[in-house]
Image (cartoon, rainbow, N blue to C red; front, side, top):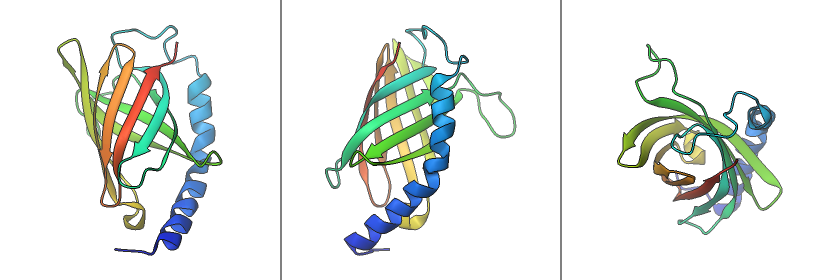
Length: 157
C-alpha cells in the first residue's frame, strides 16, 4: 500500500501513541533488578543504549533495549530465543516500544541473532532483524516493506 507521506506520518504517530503504554513496561524493565549488574561481558542479556538510523529516509533517534536471558524452550520458544524489548525515539518527542523475539546463537567470540516482529501493514508490516553482539557492541539491521536501517548500541553497565 502506497500512502501519501502526511498520511503515513499521521498513521505512524498513531501507532507510536498506541505503543506508548509499552514505554512504562520498558521503564520498569530498565530499572529492574533481574537484569544482571554488572552484565556479563560475554553474553547478550542486559541493557543496551544507542541509536537507530533509517537508510530509506534518513530518520533517526535514540534507541534502548533490554534483552532477557534465554526463554524457556517449549511450544512458543526455541533453543536460543530471547526477548528483546526495544524503545525508540523520533524527533525528540515521539517514542514507541515493542517486544520482539530473536533467536541468538554463539558464533566465534560473539553472538548472532535474527528475528521478526509483525506491525500493521500500513506501518511496514513484518519487520526482520539480523545482528551481532560482541562484548559491549550491539549492531543490527532491520527491514520491512516500508523501511530499512540500522541499530547501533553499547552495553549499559
